[in-house]
Length: 252
Image 1 (cartoon, rainbow, N blue to C red):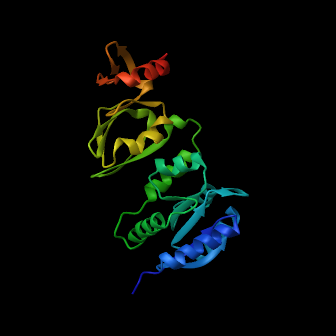
Image 2 (cartoon, rainbow, N blue to C red; image 1 turned 180 degrees about the horizontal axis):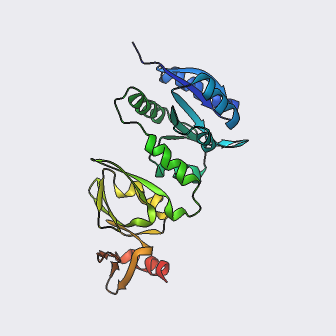
Image 3 (tube, helix red, strand yellow; image 1 turned 45 degrees about the vertical axis):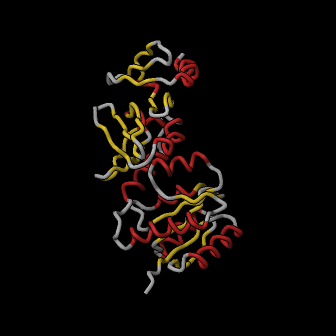
């Protein structure tokens, strides 16, 4: 018997309810739609009365944003798949916490993958994401974005690290090595390119195809063909010739 996941859709536009509802009925038979909400207040009320297992949650709402839903639940008793059109702030906030989101127009394969991940968590085949939701809540209310926590998944679990504590990231084939200000190194099973757009918003710069550095941790630039950087942890990082000019402009 196929697992039935009691789910609701939260979006302020009827056409998005119609489109996503049709996609779910066609491609995700395990989803049982039990309700629709069109605002944050409606969503909170519907969640409390229907107690869904999974919420498809739009970010842009007429009475706030989808993140406000979490203000009403100390520990969300449901899984969430976020949906959004183009809100870069929202996308980054979700990425930092390593949670699932679907960019409109929604891709069928990405939808199926997100639903499959939620199903694994709901059936205890994967760990819960309580910590990730807590990090998301904390990040949203931060005044200083440099204190934003980024989720780093390793073979040992998930480390939630403040962005300003990251000194540099080194490409390691299909992995990335993150070096922290306490001397710790975390190896993450994603390539450096996947993190580049996230890290750029925290004053990181890709100085070489194999290296991104936190410019706030640069101690010295040493001249040379490309030259190299000395960072606060004493490490030396080569600068590629083609990145040299742009880097110096950033440092001046």
